[in-house]
Length: 278
Image (cartoon, rainbow, N blue to C red):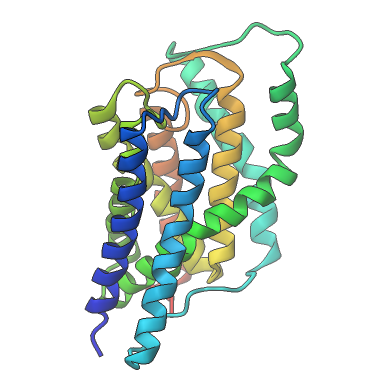
């Protein structure tokens, strides 16, 4: 049976609830870049759970209607994937900031004793915070790489085509947060465009991981690594050009997109038949 209803229903529920939360937060005066406004992280955390809820609703609907859906990938996957992601994420994301310094679009803070919050993040980023964040990124990935991506692949798209489409949708889903200062404070329009590019770049990486490992837990872990390390590195800088520097700017998009393309080349070599997400 056709899965169009599942696909459109998922997007309608996901965007309807998420955008309502984000737009309402904007009307309430929430600003994501305000460090003393704890409503911002709360809004973001709440929105992160919506894709999983939307996917669960549509999978329940599909079971009732006896519509066969691709596997959600709710399994641990190979342990080696977690080790490599854990080791490489800080090197890649740190490299984005290092390249930004070389290009003159980021300025690190003077060397000295870090403040208490930075010390806490430094200790917790690769440990407690990473695993706690994975619970919330699973809220996104169960929807994006657990349902949306497999549905796109099932419709005959190549992995790169599916990554581009799902990445663009994922980026647009963030727009209400971008409009209230997330990632690109002061640049709601340019930030909305860049968020599409960033999510397509990350989507290439996530698609390769999902196909290679068959696990949405792996993609959730990778997503959490990006969030934790990007936030930690950002605290080490006095100034970063939000449109061009760091992980979320043009530099990060190019670096992450290049890695994603290389992963897809390796994927094609290993899986010539393409798209082994079932």
